[in-house]
Amino acid sequence: MPNNGALLAFDTSAAHCAAALLRADGRVVARVEEMAKGQAERLIPLLEELLAAEGLGWADLAAIGVGIGPGNFTGVRISVSAARGLALALGVPAIGVSALEAAAEGAARPVTAVLDARRDEVYAQRFTDTGAEAPELIARAALPAGPQVEGAAPEALIAATAQIAARRLAAGAPLARPAPLYLRGADAAPPSDPPPVILP
Image 1: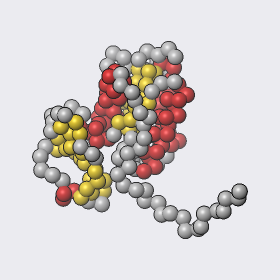
Image 2: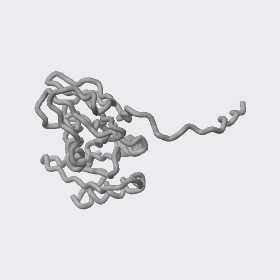
Image 3: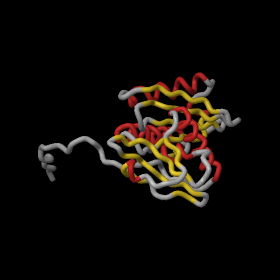
Image 4: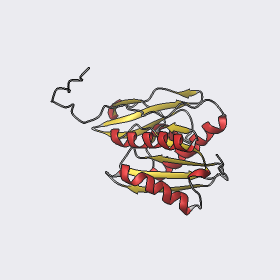
């Protein structure tokens, strides 16, 4: 499929709909719309508007980058499922990037990336020169000492997501399909009704 080397990244893991287009010349154009709900309906139109504003179409994309969380359970599912569907339809790779990786982008190592998880808890992940420890959900009071970078503006996070995805694409290593990074279960209560009987 012909393309101009552009990479489109997006994220709906928090109370926003964020997208960034990384052009082949390294220029990043980002758009963020704050919203507590409605990301599923707004995401694709936002992506189309961003592409059109840059004179591009879907066929111009070389890859899709997507924020995989941690964050809002439903929001993460929206982005990841959209990325996988678009990648399949366009015949391009989809590359998942965690919000913690994006938060740590450009920071001197070692550093612990921290994102607010509410309820006096945080999502945290320590990054070193040689790799990264597993991300975790911990009490804010339990954060280890040492250099930290906490959060970032959504515009910076989505731009970092695009740049990290582009580096992974350029590395040429096999890319796994993006999958949600859940560090906390869904808040929805399980149904109280018994499951239906499946007939043979």
